[in-house]
Amino acid sequence: MHQLTLDQAQTIVQAARQAARAAKYKPMGIVVLDASGQLVAFAREDGASMFRFDIARGKAWGAVGMGSSSRALAERAKDNPTFFISLAASAEGKFLAQPGAVLIKDADGCILGAAGASGGTGDEDEAICAAGIQAAGLVVG
Image 1: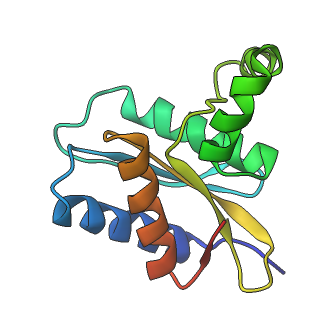
Image 2 (image 1 turned 60 degrees about the vertical axis):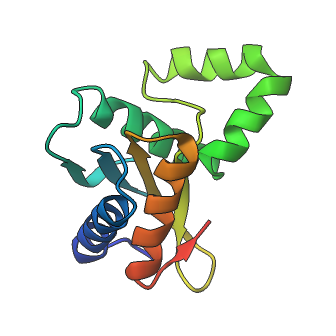
């Protein structure tokens, strides 16, 4: 069965934190959700604002729910803002189409979940998520 494990999720979070510290990014919030959008692991670094969890989760939740990176969703939202506003409203604030979350896939291409981060730029957030996923031996989607 294709399923994200707690050990994999914790590896993603820890490696993402290491990537953020190595790059000297601002304090991050990093979240890992499974394929059904449920929280598996989260870390808020010392000094990160209280908003980091909600933003990181919203990016990852949108990514896993739509089967696409949050960067791709942000691009799609530019051409169809009404649809994406409706998605955000129907998701009760859990959906955020902003760069900073990527899908987690296994070697067969099955979506296992998504990792999202908040604290840096969208590029920085996305980069640390990708680093974490790769460190866990999984595929960035």
